[in-house]
Length: 302
Image 1 (tube, rainbow, N blue to C red):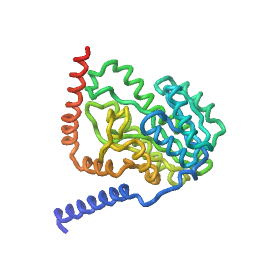
Image 2: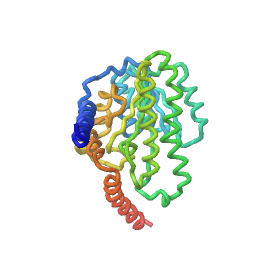
Image 3: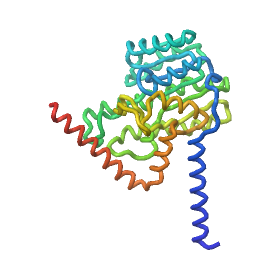
C-alpha cells in the first residue's frame, strides 16, 4: 500500500470514528434512572435558567433538593414553587455567593453533612457583560477573581466535597456545566472560554478515573439556551428553553461528555470540522458585531 493510499485509509477511518461518536452522542440509546444514585441532589445556581430547570426536573423525579444560589429571596421562591408541586420532596436552601473566598465551602459542608447526596449539578457560572478584548475589560482584576472563583473553584471544591462519599457507596452522578465555548478558543470571551475549558477537561479526566468505581461524571457543554447568562429571550431550534434542554440532558447522563441537546450536537460537530484559524475568524466577526452594538448602546445611555 502506497503512502497516499495509507493516508486515505487513515483519513476514512478517522472520519468514520468521528461520525460514529457523533451519532452515539446524538442518539444515546442508554437512559438511566437518576433516582438510583441517592436521595438528595445538590444544584448550584438554582434560581435561574438551566440550574432552576434541573432543580424542578429532579424534584419531579422524586429527589430531595439542596438549592444553592446567591439570593435568599429567589431561593425561597423556587423552593416554594417546587414543594407546592411536589409535596413529598424536601428542599433545603443555602444562600451563597460563589465569588467570595473559600470560607463559603465550610458553610456548605455543614449544611450537607449527613445527607445522602446522589446527584451534584455544578451549574453556577458567570460570563462577560458583553464580548470584549481581555485587555479592555472594565474592572478586569475583579472579573478575573470573580469568574475563576465562580466558574472554576466552585466545580473543583464541590466535587472534592461530595465525591469521596459517592465512591465509598459506589453510586453517584456529577454533572459539571461547561460550554461549547470551552471546547475551542473563543476570542472576545477569552477568560470565560478558558474557565469552561477547565470544567470540560477536569470533568472528562475525572469521568475516566471514576468509570469503574460506580460514579458517573459528565461534562455537559451546551450551546445557547434561553437564559439571563446568554441574553437570549426567545427559544428557537438551536436555542431551547432551559426546561427543554434539561429534559434532553437528563436522558444523556450516561455519556461522559455531551452538549445535552440534539441541535447543539449538530452545531458542535459542524464547528469542530473547521480549522482553528477559520473558527477564530468567524467568532471574531460574529462577537465583534455583538461587541460593537453593546458599546454603541452603552454610549447612548451615558
